[in-house]
Amino acid sequence: MEYTSFDELRRELLKETLAFRRREDINSKFKRKFLFLIERCSLSLMEGEDNFFGLFMVKIKRNIGMNLTWPIETEATLTNFVMTFDVVEILNLSEKEIIALIKHEILHIMYDHYGRTKSLRDKYSPLAVNLAMDISVNQFIKNMPAFSYKIDSVNMSLNLNLNQDQSLESYAYKIDMALKDKIKNGDKNKFEDDLFDMENIHESFLSMNDIKDLSKKTALSSFRNGRAPNGLEDILSGIVEKPEISWSKYLKRLISVYPSGYKKTITRKNRRQPDRLDLRGVLRNHISKILVAIDISGSITDEEIKEILREIFNLIKNNNVKVTLAEIDNEVRRVYEVKNKNDLRTKLDRRGGTEFSPLFKYANNNGFKDHLIIYFTDGMGEEKLTVKPMNHNIIWVLTGKSEKLSLNESCGKILKLKNSNKYEFDKDLVGIEIAREMIRELDNLNNRDLEGYR
Image (cartoon, rainbow, N blue to C red):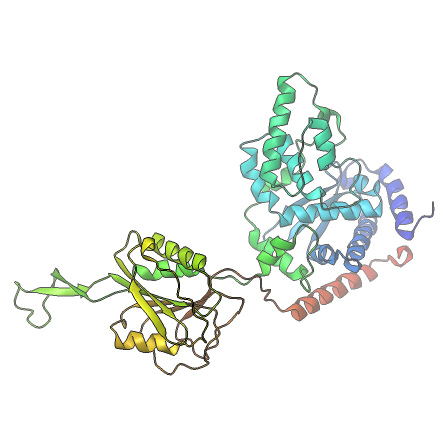
């Protein structure tokens, strides 16, 4: 077997560990060599398809230790994650196995296992939770050390039939039930004699506070060119996705404060004759009026219209609201009041062009100026309105794949019917920042008398 320079340095350092009994015995020269070995692993990750993990490691502070419950323990400060490496356990592993364990720790961070563990420990045994955490991430990693647990080994040991791509909570529940059955039946727990005490690993997770912002910040700077490693596509897409307000939440916010007309009240004096106490004053009446405009020339279906009305009526069930529905293409085709979802009529079958101006002309001329307008459209209409809207609040809800409204001036809030997965971050700035940090780290390594170990 031919040894690489990495293996030679690893074996040399492993011999030196024979003189160490505790962490305080480790000298600074050994520490520099060991951390250089870890840096070699990070650079290997940077060069391959898994460069996300390599870029993530640039942001991680590193420390060394001995007699840990797991080869790598991860903790968090206010500004950084800190990985502590057990020098003896790490040096007994190959380069591929060390890289696999680094991925293992990063996946724990990305899946928010440090936060989810706290609630799970109240329901299930520590052994069940730790096994569930490990198999949930190890299924995405190659070259894990032989002592690590995977779905197949847990299935065989506990007589289970766990499948891939299940949640941490699901794994924890099923494993905990199987462990209880073993204890109930008097079976010796297979895991008691293992090299690592599975009940005590990941204890550092319990001391972590809510640091989701730190995870997000670190992941954002590591996710370059939209290349997500296996198992993290949805998580990373959700992190870099532009936050988007739901149209229904925005509508709910407006309904309670949207005035419509006036109502008599004895709590205010009459403005015209304030000395006449027998005359009542007036207050704004918060009976909301909503004009729901549907672009029938667009891609919206009858089922989507029903779902929209169902959502609206769920929002207004505790409010005094009047809803009017208008069907429009290049002109207003039909307008009728809708008191409940059963009043909805079948959508007119029209395939004309789309114009937004006719609705606002109709609203201005037919007593809808005090209405809140919600316009559902695919967004493809004219660039400029020929009529100035008189309505105070207008919500444009885009129903198609278009990311923007054709109007140069929308005169309202533009939202999406469904969330998009558009990534919005400056990839060039992220790459420059990472390159600068890598250069600084490599310069530091060059100044540590390690030329003989490159």
